[in-house]
Length: 83
Image (cartoon, rainbow, N blue to C red):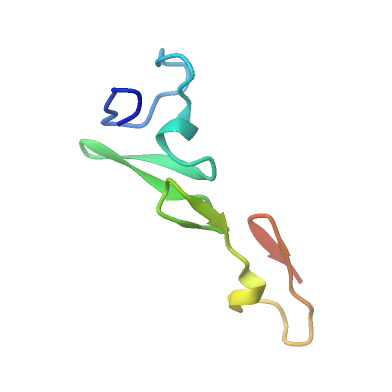
């Protein structure tokens, strides 16, 4: 629910929606809206973790979930990492 409106699906690009509304107002800024039967879900973008409303950047290097070679240096970047 936002501003008194209840969404049952993701806003369609180009569809008339209330002024000031974007996908980011339905889902968090670092999330994507995914239609599901009769509803929708907000999923954090790749490289982010959270509940779809609040997504924080995942530090793959600190969590040691990168796929860098053991002798390479992992460097965290926004939404990803480099080796």
